[in-house]
Length: 614
Image 1 (cartoon, rainbow, N blue to C red):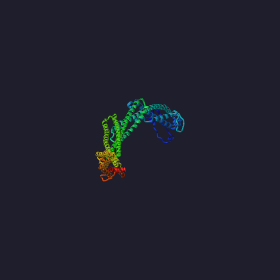
Image 2: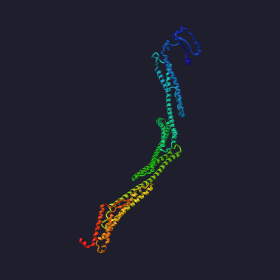
Image 3: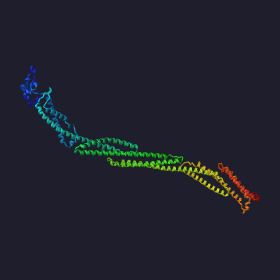
Image 4: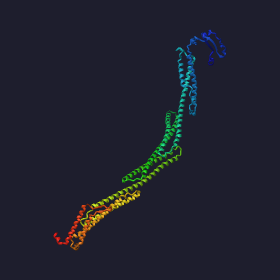
């Protein structure tokens, strides 16, 4: 070992043997034969003879000298020194290689990823800590012995080690400082490269699979369910995009932090990355929002279309059912309901047109971000579908309007039918009232010829009123027949109202004719009676005519007999004019007139007697 380590500094090697060694049989060592080969002399010597070759001040107490020395302590320190020297030298070479490579590196080398060779084999902090501790021990010039604290001055090699350690520490600090700067620069470059890589991942996904997903979604559906399915699919696409948008937010924050603390040479690249990332993300977000708005508009359009379709179906179902209202009030209620439904349909169609036009406007804007794809075909399908739905709803509404017009006309005709039937029934009632008035109030025959003529004239006017009422009823019943034919329903008037009208009119006619006969007889009776009762000296021959008296008497009796005869209707029923008291009063008046005529006749026959009696 000595030969290999310090052969030039060794001239004599003393191998110290214990005293017990000499009492034994010893083998003769022929070390002198190896002097030429080893380069130094080797001798065996006892401890008490060691001073022959070495001064006592150079020997430790173990060998009878005065040198203060702790070999184990020196050995430990020496091992620490040698380890530090070795590690620091190796670390300096590695750091110099790393730092020099970084100084001479070009842009291409800066862009390379960091590999394992970039890291030193030992921790620089640990080596520096070890060096500082070793230097501190050397500078104190005090070492702790193995027996616990005897002070001694350091050896020459230890004194020489102190500047060597200081030099190594200075070199290490310099190289380590440069190394830290290199690490910082490369860490920043690594961070920048990682950000750039993530940015490109986001951009590539958004411009690749993300755009493909949106490019494949252009339809709006043909119903609410289809639009909801497309909306659900779009929500899945948005969910996938939201993950990348979260990465975008994180990257944007990291880029902003680097921009605040970055070097001038990185600002341009960072801003370019930030701008590229923002442009792509905002464009994709705008497309997602546009698609979502489009699907929402389509869903609202189909919702309005479905509601309108249901309204039209309900209106059509109502129109297809043949109704038979019981009266005019129910018809008015039905017409009101039809008008309300038709108005609701108008409002729904107007809403559908507004929704459809808004949807068409949105579709027309799709070409502004069509991903480079020709969307004419897809847009044409969507536009044709929207226009087709609106046209179909317009046609269905028009058909319903036509049917409503027909139903309205039919309802109005039914109103007219009910009105005609009602008015015809009223005409029958009026005619019945006229007949009743004729029989109960038209009973007087007049007190003289003039009054009777007035009564006859009034009766004729009364008959004219009844005739007009009857004609009015007949016209109404004829109108009901025409309306029933138009409505294709069985005439309901001929079974009840018309027979009643004819029956009442027949009864009125019979009663009216009887009334006319009585009034005419009364006129004849009063006219002849008045001629006789008046004094007419110019025509004595007329007054003395017995035939006139007989005629008056005969007419009077016929009239009295007629008053007691009832009016006989075709069905066999009988009816009298007025009450029995009314007939008795009329008959009494006629008898009084007949008595006057009879007295006049007697006076003419016996003038002298009548004068005396007078």
